[in-house]
Length: 602
Image (cartoon, rainbow, N blue to C red):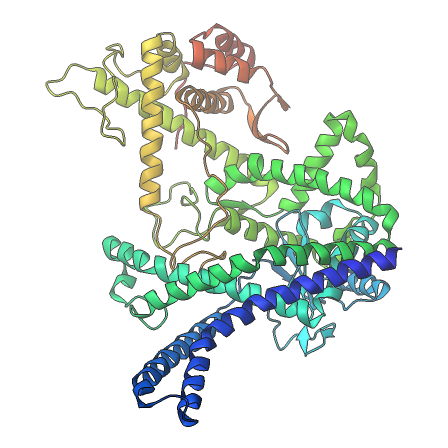
């Protein structure tokens, strides 16, 4: 029954692959229809069925046929020459992971399918097969009929560090089994056709967006603005590329249903074939996939993202996943069973240099989620104005508390006191009051602030103002406006890149990151609470001997006497939202923080 079901799914996949190819053949037949009509007309004239009165019609149809053939040939050339999108990955040569390559080849031999032509890692919790050009100087494991290399096996890097070797083998078995259907000529041709259509659509989109990128360079006055725009054969090619893109989009839409059913059949056949390899461990491996995804998502959003905002990229993200999930197993009793697995051999032992591979994948993750250039320049103590393009700066986990957490707190505290200073100066009586305009052009109502002299960057100065509802609301609005202006200024100063896009869909000169938000939208009270917390952390470090720390599940934290204090967040929220500074003052006294001491800002 298993073999019969596998054969049924394979036959269904091939039938849908033929349906995809029929869409291409239909488009080709429509393009050849005027030429066929012209041939029929001339044949009828040659046999005497049509008189001389039909001569103009024959030549008109011939001209239409020539134009249609020329347009179809040009469109076919554009579609055929369009480069399909390739997922950004870190390629693993056999010398870097001989044991992993042997494991994959062994799985392929047990399944009776061609082995993948290469192995690559991606900073994601997923695995798939991807067809891509293979360098000529690298030997192939196997070749499928037609002298085409087998697809590349892409593995999520968190799997290698969290999963055990047996679990990884069970997880990869259904993926590797997909190389069998990929060897079938009809399925391979249907996939190549779909990738060509998709690449043609992307090329048309680049042709549409590139002129706007060039005009942005002219407005910015960059050196590249003097160069002619580089897209296709020039401005005349843009309308043609758009037309080809519309045609490819229509064909892709017509074949979309069959493509989905074809891939579903391929996946079902591969899953049934892989049941002969470690089927009992597959359920356990799937449980680990969900746990690894949860740890990876938490690590990126809580730990890596604050560093990426500062232009720093943690160099051991995959090792951080293990630390985060180990911490989760310590806190959550439901995850206690997963910690016992750590005594078994991890899959990362299949790599010769796990640290180097982890660093390469971690750097790729920063570029994927944020962009090829960091959003801000890496903060350097005593450094002058930034010169040249911004560059990413690596940071190790042991240096993370000082270089990331400490820098975040100092930056937030400096912004808080800047906003307070501007509010104090604006509140002073002046002939022409100065206001900080919002993006919409409306000034903030700052007249409600009390007329007091500036008392310096101390916590006491901030706490005194939080007691007044009007002053607290005005300070929160000032903070929101100030942060918005800084973000807008940083975005306007972001240079256009000289290198190509990192992800498919980007335009030459513009990055195309995955879109992980650099700063989630927050309300004014939340911003005030965050900045107040930053100022308190700075004061605790400067006057009470506290230190910044790293929590694998929550990111930057404050360590008082070597332990994380959980009572601070509630006291900060009460002071920022309701003006109740009593609990916060009690916490400061208990921690030995002196509110009257000036803070060390950036």
